Length: 302
Image (cartoon, rainbow, N blue to C red; front, side, top):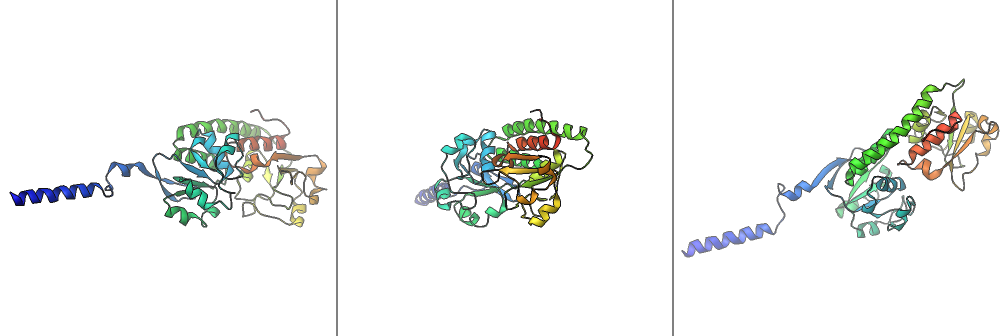
């Protein structure tokens, strides 16, 4: 009897101690983790229900609000100024130099970044804290829409994101119809001036894709980098028919090298709000419509 009692006591202690440890992988808690693929093909393990996220790019912040998940953002950058509600969220520094201590203190489950270049400096620190990093890196209009659905999916709003994208795609189709129905005597060549020092857009930029969809051709579309800086001699030689300015206080006029260009002579200089043009999110279709207006000389039906 004593041996039996001792055996039962030891068995009970083992059961209780096992209950205090880490649940085995087959427990229900393991089922709350899922693996998703981010914009550069990384496999990211995330909670099934993400309730706390940090956005390190204004376009990502706009996407989160557009799909109905703005309340899940606990931190954003100082550049995140749209929609107005973003101004009420805790700031974690700027896009290129976020405050890692602040991010960790906010206890997010995931941090969204806009390009792979933001990864190296802080991914290790966040990983040590159990905070996952999800990268978006759209290089075309379709991939912008894809990133919107992916972000919506991570934040538990995939269906809402798909509806937002569906509405935007309907507007894109109207632009494509105009493009298909219009012929020009000469190619509608476009130069995009990101800033007066002649940063522009190259092959890897979604803006180059927007110009093509709108019926134009970026004169710098063959440049390998997404946002190259070109020389004044190269810019002068391009002689674009249309110049698009990423409109900001320091980028209101074409560089002086374009003074004799076809675009300036013909008054075909289009200013598009820099936030609308430079953020690959829900407002990017507005930029597409304005580019189409500049190329076709008409107002695109919204």
